[in-house]
Length: 270
Image 1 (cartoon, rainbow, N blue to C red):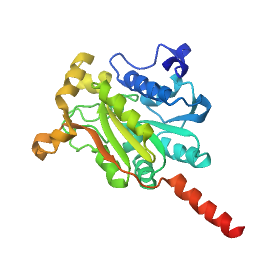
Image 2 (cartoon, rainbow, N blue to C red; image 1 turned 30 degrees about the horizontal axis):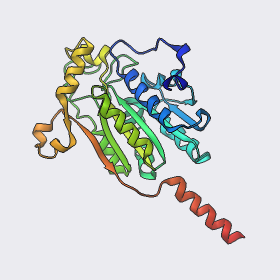
Image 3 (tube, helix red, strand yellow; image 1 turned 90 degrees about the vertical axis):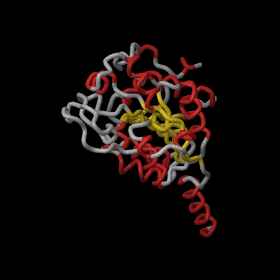
């Protein structure tokens, strides 16, 4: 049951009304529950940010680290005990803006863990400054006249770096999100799921979407399935969120490769 993994005594949660983090948390916990694992064999690692508060509500082993370093801590935990089921929860600030270097190297190494990056398109916890994923022309506290930079396509970055499972969903389409997280858990290797979940308090209000319903409608309008995107031009895809599975390939994960070396050396020594 979901309640087996949810710290109900810490509710009501910290997140603002209209925030999608609760939707992602529910999807994550329901999928963990399906596995039948012991809570002691599961570790949830978080960094700093709104989504980083998720560990306050999770009844497994948890590790709350510093900003941008969640994947570094997760890598250490997984390598120290490869039998653990490791989940890394990051925001766009934690995952790609400040922690981008750790993200590309975790993907390159193919560390066997699940990374879920909730992309709220700005630094929500610290007042709504722009991040590495803020859309061009968006209004934020640090781009009051319109953002002039192009945001990262994070899934393409992770795919190019070597991530063996890469997907994007949204908090609007919960059915798809559940399936993507389920696939990520089943995959052996670095599994990355980006979840589009704009911040209603800062990004929404600054960009004429003061109500959560307006934000959900906007997500729906801006979303394009991967299959349809293949026949669209770059101009047509400008500002859209392409959803689906970008990569699902099999290659040896880091822990397996490392253990193979250890076993070979033991054999030579014996």
